[in-house]
Amino acid sequence: MTNRERYKQTFSVLHASTERKWEAPMKENRKRYITRTTLAAALCCMLLISTGITAYAYGEVILQRLFGWENNAKITVKTGENGETVHEVYLHTDSLTDPVAIEDGALFFIVNHEHLNITDKVSTTKPFHYEYQDEQGNTHYWIVGLNDDSQPGNFGYAEFIRSADGEWMGGYSARVNIEADGSVIEWLQIGKQDIGTPW
Image (cartoon, rainbow, N blue to C red; front, side, top):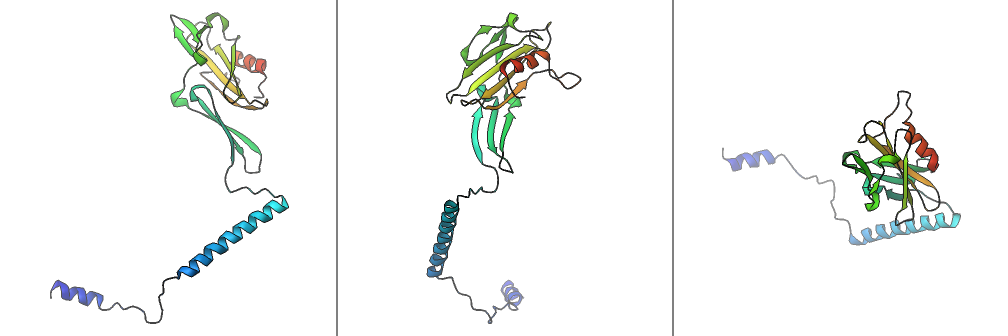
């Protein structure tokens, strides 16, 4: 038996059904369907506007997004599941840019192209403060301190952001010692109290 004969024998048992008529949908029907959908959506929007109801799509609605210095952190302000405002902070731990450089054993604060020698202005109990406004009018508050007075290279820092209308948006701290009871080191506690963060 040849391949052709095998092919014919294999497919000879298959037949198209004679019971069903297959027709391509008409172009006119498709247009009518789209028109009805568009009309329904327009009526729904008009109803929502006329009754003053605010509709939220499934998922989150992002209200605002801001970034810390050198994109160390991304703060997203969005609506939560119950319509409340949620501030979410994402810290880029794999690519953090320190605001302090060590030169010849001295600490220099370098945010915004500054080059301030802060060696004598920081300790485990004394924070250094710095603030600036970005292009959107948000104020960035910096706090720098030492985690160990005997090692100037063992510094930590925090950045907190407050919007132009005075609302605290979020913040982060990095290279900070956590005490055994879960509290943070004293310089950071004092620094946060000084600027009045709610956290």
